[in-house]
Amino acid sequence: MPTRSARTAWNGGLEDGSGQVELTSSGRGTFDVSFPKRAADDADGTTSPEELIAAAHSACFAMQLSAVIAEAGGTPQALEVKADVSLGPHPESGFRLTGITLTVRGEVTGLDADGFATAAQTAKETCPVSRALTGVDITLDAALES
Image 1 (cartoon, one colour):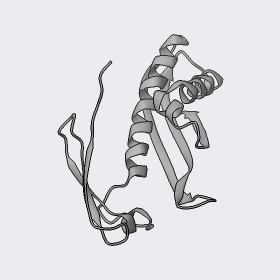
Image 2: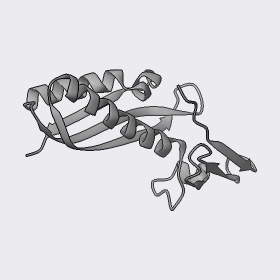
Image 3: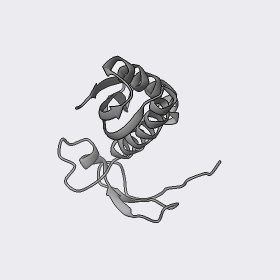
């Protein structure tokens, strides 16, 4: 299986420094990062580790859910997945991820609402990114749309 890479160049200290995250494997972009904007309510055009984790988690979950739906005899027509990753203080020192909420709305043939909810729960538990983030509370809000 492949390995994917990203690189960060950082200059300065935590509070006054900044950096750029480069998506090295895909070559699809370089994005600014800074701690003050990471900890602020408004990202103001910069990304953060939490946003990158949210992107990875939503994409991984969508792929896994499409596979689980097919295994259950359904056919995914469309899946809309949002991942919200929260940052907060660590009880001992520093910061930690305080929670992740996965919200999925799906258009699926061949599964009812209960079947879709079961598939979404299975995908949450078996998605590789979810498995990597076992130390974080992950909640799921899954519903079919007509």
